[in-house]
Each structure stands twice: as C-alpha cells, then as structure tokens.
Image 1 (cartoon, one colour):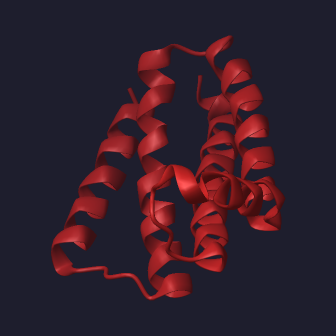
Image 2: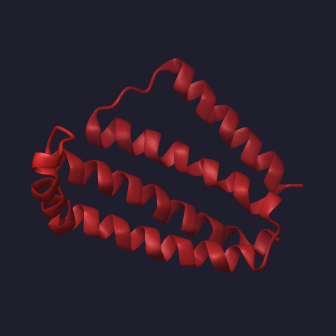
Length: 122
C-alpha cells in the first residue's frame, strides 16, 4: 500500500489546490447577496472565472486519481490522507490570503500530521 502514497498525495494536493483556486476566484468576484435577482449575474461571473474553472479541473482530476487509489488500497488506509488537505489549505491560506494561523490551529495541524504518519505506517 505504501507504494500508492504518491498517487494518494497527488489527489489530495489537487483537491486542496481546487479549494485555494475557488477562494481566489471568489475573492475576484467579490461579496454578493444570495437572491434570485442577482443569481444569473453571479452564476455567469462564476462560470467564466479562470480560477474557478481551474479549480473544477483540479477537482475532476483529483476524483479520477481518487478512484484509482480506491481501486488499489483499502479506504481505511487512503482516507486519512485527505486530512493533509487541511494542512495545505491552512498554510497556503496564511501565506497567500493573510488568513489567521493561531497556535491552536498549528497544534491541530501537528496532530493531523502525527495521525497521518501513524496510519501510513500501519
């Protein structure tokens, strides 16, 4: 199972990248109110935003990779690796978007890392 870790990490990284690209795209679109009156205009902005389109592409590729992973390893082995996405998005959010990264979050990230290491060695 260990030999599939690069494939797992590729899928997880693409999934996290998709989240970051959605955030970037939504920052470009800006705040909007949820209402029927502006639904069409907002949907059009989302549909043509390059960051959102890149995010959707990343999602599609990550799902294909995840299907490959699950056809080769136990889900109980692969699934915990998804938590690495939390780490990636927190770090990129901090450096790219100036989002908070408190001591409590850093401790949580440390626990996630420890858990992934323990599960990957089982």
